Length: 185
Length: 109
Picture 1: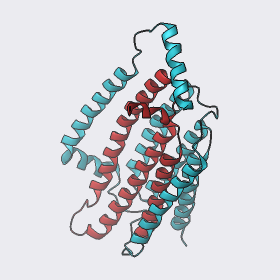
Picture 2: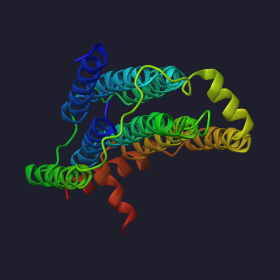
Picture 3: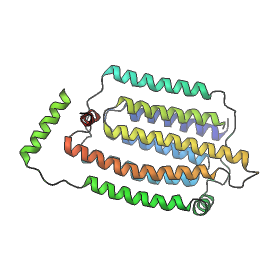
């Protein structure tokens, strides 16, 4: 067993364990931190496959930007207490059984696929030079459209996040009480 | 590495994401599980692109680079989605003082 195989298994086991911890841990802040670990292991897989550009983008965009945004929102809402109401035990069991059945069916269906090999540490299609050439030759239009998508997402986030006009305190308190009652039903 | 190992690893990560969506009630954690599923798909796309490269490199010089660009565009869409989704969650929290998804059933009646 070469060093590549050993690294693959270590990264795979860490990825699955940290993904499980994302779902299991009660505190949302710990969930975010475990998700960052998962993203780093997936970046490690990209490096093993010699997709260096995607590995770097994955760390910068996911672990750097998106997860900081999540952490920001959780801290802003002061959710880092374990106040989340839990689903009932039977619903959790049903969810786990449903997911397990899906995994079982897919694994059973894909078990006898051809044993094609992937290229692990060599090959230069994942390098930034090749991807840049392909991106700006064949994929210019999708690239420009994605910039419009970003602009519209930015405008949408600002419009949604803008503070609404102030309503009197009593009305707001009544609304809060109504929603609290609505949960208890 | 045989492609089967990557298929099974990605499937496991994807199913863990599905189980998280089905069993948690916190909207933010459900959102994070969706990100996990996106990443599982990305990993599988990269593995398939390298497999395609090995089999077709004699015919096309940069075979398989399309798959890696797809991953790039998925990341772009995911970033936009997170910005809009988190602002929706913030708005929801401001109106109901909770991020419990069981609140959202009020849209139903």
